[in-house]
Image (cartoon, rainbow, N blue to C red):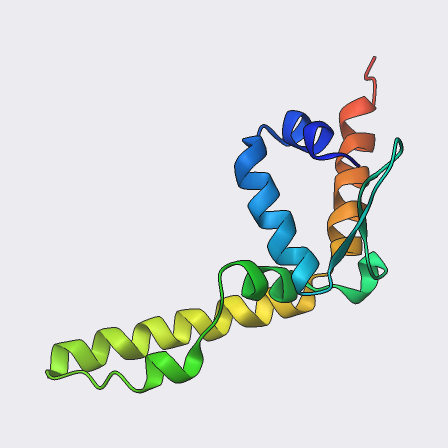
Length: 118
């Protein structure tokens, strides 16, 4: 798809989307195609890309950086442990979901929305 199409459908500013797609392209998740029918395509199959892959590419999960910050107080240590637990839980969920799973869920939701009741 072309950037303008994606931006319009998802209500994302063009410039921001360009930055996101450039990051995803450098990481090998999408590839760009030039020409009249050009745009962006997935570089791998949707079932091979997890949400964790995408989020870590765009947002970054720098575990090493976070583990070097030792809390100075007991309260700080407790908060750091809670955040670490939350991060691990989020990572587990994101690692289990693929782009294909999202597509399947969207299609199922659209089918439910199209049902007519008498």
